[in-house]
Image (cartoon, rainbow, N blue to C red; front, side, top):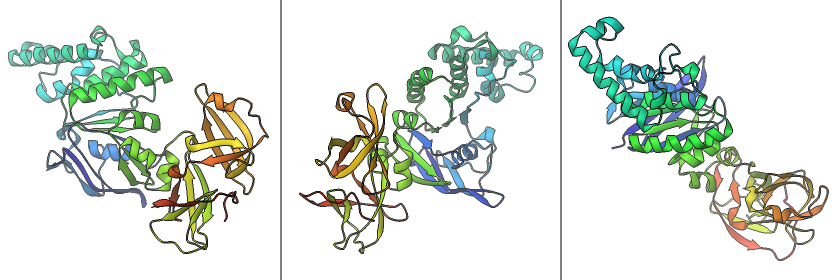
Length: 389
């Protein structure tokens, strides 16, 4: 039995479908990153799981129990928001203690003066303080316990928000773009911290982000959502190397994957330059298809030595790599190559080049964007046209 499950979650606003049958399972201690373009429904899904919004249809199951109808406070879920949502008038220590105080102290016990006079509540308060101190020490923010949010940096506020979520020992962690307010260098450092904290907690974590590098570097599995649908949920490597849908392939990867339209030839083959591919699903001649290949699998050769004649439009030097934008000679299409700086020596804008494709890295999709798995049928010894269609 999975530690956490979503079953056919649907949500609409004003007749517009925001979530369309989202279902998946998460195991204990698994880190799942939800990625997708703005408006795809990932934050709405997180709010529904948290109990801050309600699904029109579907079930949320935690530890084998359906919690769909429970109030947010009764689900034992901790959420870290993009804004951190810390109480500005409370110190870091008081912010961390809030979920414990709300759960364990009586209404009178939460009052500053009266609570301190009730013997049973004093013991609970002391225990809460010990838990807060232990959590702050583990996150190395014990020196911040007496500061208020306005006296802390963005990175410090983020750690306080994480400590507040962790101290309650939830069944599920939800994180809604918790690093988006940090600068680039701090974000890279914070990624490792969040992964370490997740491992210590050992509970399922759903992490919403628009940053694909965060998703690929942090998650055990990545869920790609497009238009309210979950198109693929898989390991970072498989979802990058073997996307099952064209939209998944286009969303992941920087620079973006190269996409060219073509048609099936009279022999039922898909041609990409000199490479001819036979799809596992037989296709009729003239059937429209799309071939896609990532920039790192494109090599530049002298004009006449490759399979796709092109001309360099511009070069971008990025330090450890150079991104080369080329325009195909036989059709109006741009192909991007990502090469090492040493390979770019002598290349100039306007220079004619030929592009060589790695046959094993070419992906084929049908006219609906679904993946068509294919094998290399034949590599022609002579130069062919760039692509027909």
